[in-house]
Image 1 (cartoon, rainbow, N blue to C red):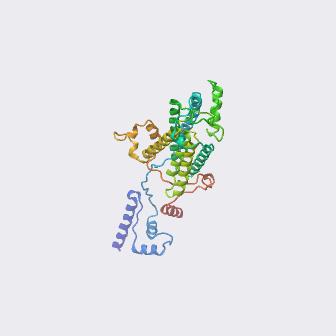
Image 2 (cartoon, rainbow, N blue to C red):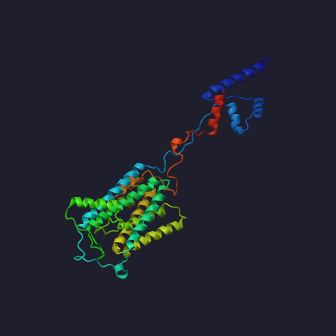
Image 3 (cartoon, rainbow, N blue to C red):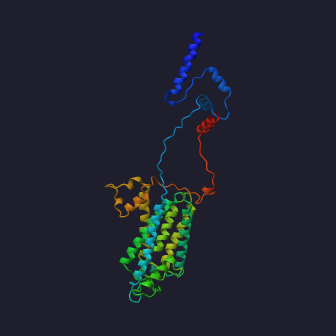
Length: 365
């Protein structure tokens, strides 16, 4: 009897010692206890969890290390900055057109320059309207596609920065070299000779009409080098193809045909010299490819003696927009507006099975 009581006392002391160790409750169970516990196991829990909760009602939540840094931060405020940049350069372009218009020589004094395309292809009057309609279709397609992109904020600031930079270049080229009109069919608006109020009205008319001939807002001459219509036709196609699934070959083909038809119609209408279109295509494609190559390759975001792309004047602006984007953007889509809205959704917590069962045990005790 004394030995039995001594054994029970030792077991009791050992249990108390284990419970006090590191604040973790522990207990020693006998074979008979295990048999009883096995008979009363809840059927809804795994065996190991059942036995662990029976012996150790307290639990420890183990947090797994996760990558706390988001690879694709939205940063909508940067997209807003890029939009302001693009809008400013487009307004600057309309201002520059009104300035250059005053310097365009009359077609009676300076006839159109020789152009090989014009030598072989006669002018078609309605072709320029077709070009503008195809451009509007491409812009509409790209806008709808952009709205459904998951990372639309990143893609949006890329588009706004590139189109803003292209129009900034266009302001420079049309200002430094004023070309005569490409055809005798041009009916340029009268010159204002310094009337600032009338020039402001022309600027507002250009902006409100989008600078399109079909809206009646494109009545000024001089914005030839390089073609703004070619910029939009080319850039929208490049973005549509880049941010759409690769197996949508039919969609890419349709957009390419629209873009190519629009560019050809510009030349067929004799609204731009051939060099205007070639320069616009070259500058647009190179800026698009350079920017996206630098954005997709992490090593090109750091300055080094071998990375000559960092010598571009817009590299600091590029870093401002892209330094937090850690990888190539996947081509994924999402609904632009979640339904039901978050204000109507019931708040809930996500529990693991261990957490939920542990709380149930605490409530039961």
